[in-house]
Image (cartoon, rainbow, N blue to C red; front, side, top):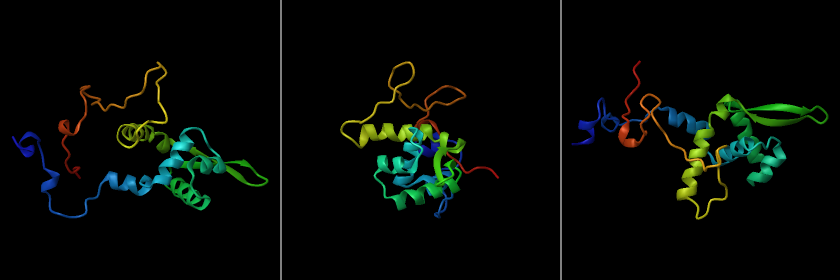
Length: 156
């Protein structure tokens, strides 16, 4: 059987050629740059002050300032003032930023497997076991893989 015979609906590969609007493209417009993701990594680790974020990332101050402004404008992080004289701010994840945790963990897990020889960190659950990101259907509990889903245009 071919792919189109086993999956219901429209095959996206068969649609007329054209730039495809999608949520992935929109997300990459906000997050799809190395320094943005590394800033989010540091804030997620509890590093909230600019100089320390820059120090752990190795980014230039100008680059980091630009990425933090963009992440704040997108609603992924928020600035909180901790000093009036001189004015100083900390950076914290918003709800949108906190919801990136599984994405960041999955990217890290992929990097451990495919991008480095030896991982530098281990993520462990409170039970003590290494965390393994798995995607399952919330309805039936079965694994979600490329072979178990079909993608179709959203109805209007």
